[in-house]
Image (cartoon, rainbow, N blue to C red; front, side, top):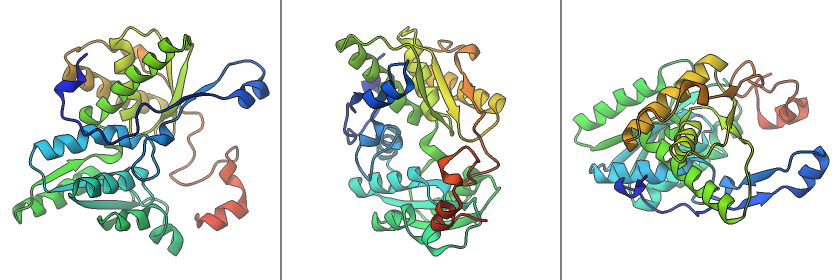
Length: 285
């Protein structure tokens, strides 16, 4: 599978380390646990979005865009990384931020990732919770296009077939590390939300016949909807790569037992359920 056929900016710090978790492995007394350190991808504090943006921002540039737009929650990591990538390329960035929590705390609304968005030169505007944010973004983009701007829009989380290429590439990278270290991977577990990470990983793993089961731990939608979102995106990604049909519906598995009542609302089992932590973070009561 020849990913060099697609435009890409090589700005991420790759390959990220594959690190054995010795103390956690001992604590659990059974499974040998390794972690793929995608917190180390670089740009503005790392994370999984950097891999996606390598392909998305290169496509934007190839299409002649002079402004990129994206959307996400107020404290979106994806928005922060998009702003950072745009700054690196000298491109304008505009972000729609969805108020999913209703928090009135100044720190929540103006610090953290929002502060970094602005430090990276992005402009932002807010939207209330519950709307179709991708449709809202396209409406704003159309107005900017009518004013003469060349706008490239990126869906929330960078999760479309172009963005998912970043995690197809991660699957290749991970398998190469496992092979070179004689490490047999029995199961791969990761977080799944906007679907791009899981869709890219499962497409890459299946295309290589890696025979590594993949489990996404849902942070967003009910199980059936989450798995369907991932499967549909994986199919579109495989088609983009020229290997349509490589992913079957049964290959896509998500555990959504830990999804809570809503965005930013801690669950009883989560570490964020401590009331002092919630107050300090500015969460709604």
